Amino acid sequence: MAARALLAAPAADTTCGTGRLLAAAAETCGNRVGTHEVQEVLDAGLVELTGTGLKFRHPLMRSAIYAQLPLAERLATHNALAGQLDDLPDRQLWHRAAGVLATDEDIAVQLEAYATRSRKRGP
Image 1 (spheres, one colour):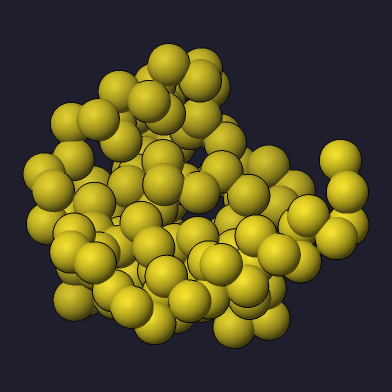
Image 2 (spheres, rainbow, N blue to C red; image 1 turned 135 degrees about the horizontal axis):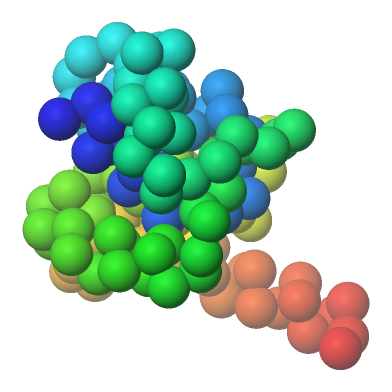
């Protein structure tokens, strides 16, 4: 289960560093995720360890893993990643929005504010 959670995290966010991915995977599966689990997914040949995180060897593998995640795991992964991104509020908001099924008024208000900031920055 820990290795599966470790694959789910970079499938949901290709930009997070290894520390954040490990913490999100641990939160999602409820167990410590560390060197053993990283080695397990490396040995499977699905990902490689880069200077900043885990990268899928092929982009379709990332898509396939994300698509096969049961809905509850997908939502939990996005929520766990959001919890690791306090220093990146826009990225955190994206994961919070991806981690809910129903309308969330607080997230909707924040998304509107984000859209306004983005329009002011321009193309």
